[in-house]
Image 1 (tube, helix red, strand yellow):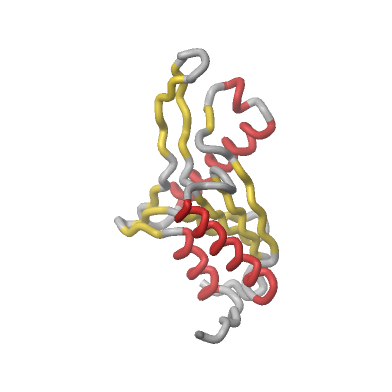
Image 2 (image 1 turned 90 degrees about the vertical axis):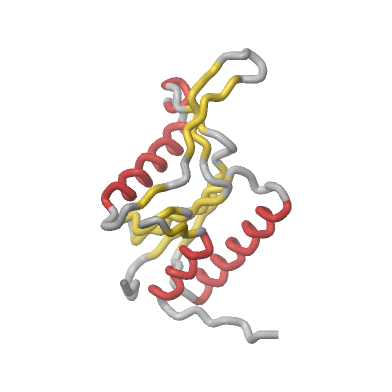
Length: 159
């Protein structure tokens, strides 16, 4: 699939901008690569959203602006995975969580530490990480796909 003429945007979703060591390094590499893509490559625009380490799916939380936006995005991602030609699954886990303060249990959705959604205008093209036909694809795999499918990206010379 070529992306010539497409208006590509990438939405990056993170649990935190200060995750544990190796994850932080991965985040920085992804964000730096997106900057290069925006300057000279296949991306016209990109953004970062912090959605925390879990998303409560109760009616009260999903009625807030942040909760509604997160819930709508996850629903959009799930709809995309259901429409995909191959068997696609996304690593959004559902867990029973006990609130530290009140001791009450609630259902929460735990997103991956790092997720990207690739759009052509308003059309969702791909979500990473994902598993398709038994093969796991990382966020880096998603950026590799974007680079191969899009306009050429100049690479710095090897040191």
